[in-house]
Structure formats: structure tokens, C-alpha cells
Amino acid sequence: MASEEITTTGYIQHHLQNMAYGKLPAGYERVNADGSITVLEESTWTLAHTSQEAVDMGFWAVHLDSMGWSIALGVIFAFLFARVASKATVGVPTGVQSFVELVVEFVDNTVKDIFHHRNTMIAPMALTIFMWVFMMNFMDLIPVDWLPMAAAKIAGNDHLFFKVVPTTDPNITLGMAFAVFLLMLFFSIKEKGLMGFVKELTLHPFHAGKWYVDIFLIPINLILETVSLIAKPISLGLRLFGNLYAGEMIFILIALMFGGGALLFAGAGVLQWGWAVFHILVITLQAFVFMVLTTVYMAMAHDTGEDH
Amino acid sequence: MNINLTLIGQTVTFLVFVWFCWKYVWPALIGVMAEREKKIAEGLQAAERADKDLELAQKKATDQLKEAKVQAATIVEQANKRAAQIVEEAKEQARAEGDRLKAAAQAEILQESNRAKEALRAQVATLALAGATKVLGSSVDEAKHSELLNQLAQEL
Image 1 (cartoon, rainbow over the protein chains, first blue to last red):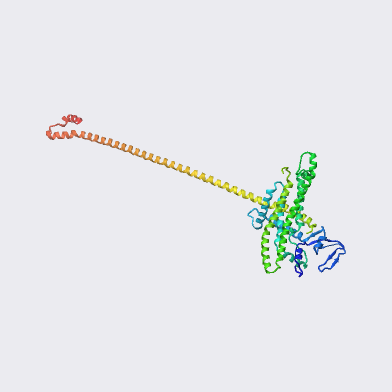
Image 2 (cartoon, chains in turn green, yellow):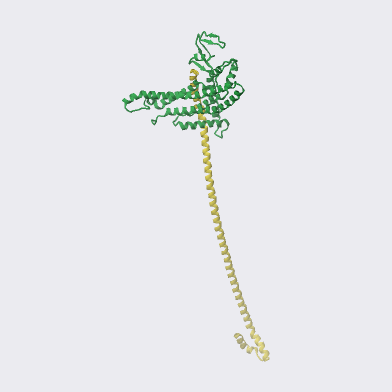
């Protein structure tokens, strides 16, 4: 960005790399910015300087930027709502309280429409998802270079990787989807018992009622049901990731246009505005979809009836 | 874009925030909202009750007014009747008193005339004697003729 020899590919790649903090093994050859190579004498915990280093860190690395923004936004949400909750009055609600109540009522109604079992955890979870995912998505509307450049200036490192939209990191979206998946398993087993859950996986959708036929149907059922079970969290996480990743990609491409002369600059301005307006819809919708699908999955986990 | 520890980190963070919201945010907010809803419902109910009460009170007032009017009319009628009766009685009394006075006057007149007759009768003998004396020229002896004259006076 600030360096002269910046290329389009480099710019895009730089924007798509998270700030990874992980362990590089001993003997690892680090390629420095000027092309020289430093060999690590022992395994080191460090920030990845290149995308290749981030890959080589393997599983035991943390994306400090997406994790940090995710937690920061979550704390803002929790703090704001907890503050309002502790100060809430029964009288006429004003200011932040009326906004918070609006959101809570909206979420409560949505959950009540979908989820008909007794579980006090589902509605608060839906609220957390909606607000948190919305706020994480909202980071996408901040012009793509502002925060990364500010961070680079503060850190004094032009090559600092800094992604501000947590939901464009598949780790974040799949991490939440994974938590939803765990809760699905937990509530399924809690509501139906382990045997009930196993029966659901093995005796649906094909069920003959005669054991010598069922023996052959069970493997087929198991494969079908397992796939559909696993597909739920994966599709849940990837849907959010895909939408936001694509959205951010467009913003990056528009940002590139700003450097291409007066005509392109004006065009980019219009496009930036248009895409941002459209994106307001997308980020809200995706937060809502994540919330609704989570609630639906929870309702399915609680369904003990054989009526499907 | 690598899958790494961030995934587990986000899973844990997610569960922590959900737990926080579940314990500290949701119940308080929902509680307040439910309480307000109850309050509003109660207020509406009270308003409805008050409306009904007002209607009842108005009805009662109208009824009482109507009754009072009827009573007043009855009282006025009775009073009128009584007044007419009193006038009638007074007339009757006056007439009776008049009759009585007339009768008394007539009786007195009769008495007076009788008395005058008596007086006249008593004096008639004297007058007749005086007249006869004048006519006969003292030829009539009072002592002799008094019996005759008395008899005459009796006959008058």
C-alpha cells in the first residue's frame, strides 16, 4: 500500500491475509521483505510475515485480528445490552432502551414462531447471534483501507496483515457453526436420549418395520442422515462466510479502481456507495439467516415426534 | 484463510457470550417488558371498568332525576288538591256563617217587632182611652171602663 512497488495482486492478497500468530518450527527458512532468507534456530512463536508462513504454522495458530475484533464486538454487544438490562425501567422506554427492546422483541417473536419447546436458552442465543453477527458484518461497511492502514501506522509495520471483518474469516463462521453443531448434538441427546438419537440416525428415512429388512436399510439411513447432519453446520458457516467474503472482495476491487485516474475514481465512488447501500441489506439479512437457521436446527434437535 | 485454532477460539467465545446473554441480559429485559405489558393491560382494564362505572352512575342519576320529577309532580298535585279543598271548606264555612248570621238577624228582627207590638199593645188602651175621652168629653170613667179597654187591648 505505502510502498512504491505495490501490485494489484499483492494488494488483494495482502487484504485477504489474516494476522496469524503461531509457531514456526526450528530450521524454518523465513523469507524477508528484501528477499534474503533467515533460518530459525529453534521453534518460535511469532506473527506470520507472509501468507506462506501462515500456512506453514498449521492448525496451532490464531488469527489475532479476526479473533480480536470478534471478541471486542461481542464485548460491546454484551456490555451495551447488559447495561440496558440492568437499568431497564417498566415505564416508557427511551433512547437505547427502546432500541434494545425493539431488537429483543423482534428476536423473541421470531424464535417463538419457530421454536415451540421449553428451552430458555434458545432466544438469548438467537439474540446474541443476531446482534453479534450483525456487528461483525457491519465492519465490512467501513472502507477497506482505513483500519488496516491505521493499524499499520500504529504498529510501524507497512506489511502488517490486518483484516477487520471477522465474518470473512472461515474460522469465525465455522467456529460459530461448530458451537451450534455441538448444541444440536447436546440437545438431541438430552431430549431423545442416546438411543433415540441413534434411532433417528439409523431408522430414518427408510423404515420397513421388519428387522431382516431394516438390517439392510440401516447403513443407507446412517449415511444419508449423517450427511444431512454434518451438512447443517457446514452450510451454516459457509453461507455467512461466502456472502461476506464476496462482499469484501467487491469492496477491495472497488478500492483498487480509486487509483486508476479521475474517471475511474468517480466511477469507483458511485460503485462504492451503491455496493455499500446494497450491503446494508446483505449484512442484516445474513445475520438474520444465521439466527433463524440456528433456531430451526435447535427446534429439530428438540423434536421428538415421529411426524416428519 | 487457513483453518486453525481461531475456530476453536470462536466456538468457545460464542458459547461464553451466549451464556452471558442467557444469564444476565435476556431474563432482565424480557422481565421488564412482560411487566410493562401487564401494567398496560391492567391500565386498559381499569379504564374499561371506569367507563362502565361512569355509564352506570349516569344511568342511576338519570333514574333518580326521573323519580324526583315524578315525586315533585305528585306533591304539586296533592298540594293543588289540598288548596282547592281548603278553599271549598272556607267557602262552605263562610256560607254557613252567613246563614247563621242571617238567621240570627231575622230572629232579632222578629223579636224586636214582637216587642214593638207588645209595647204598642200596652199603649193602645191608653191611646184609645185618651182618644175616647177626647171624643166623649170625659164621660168615660177610667175605673169603670178600664176592664172594657183592657179587653179591647187584648183583642188587638
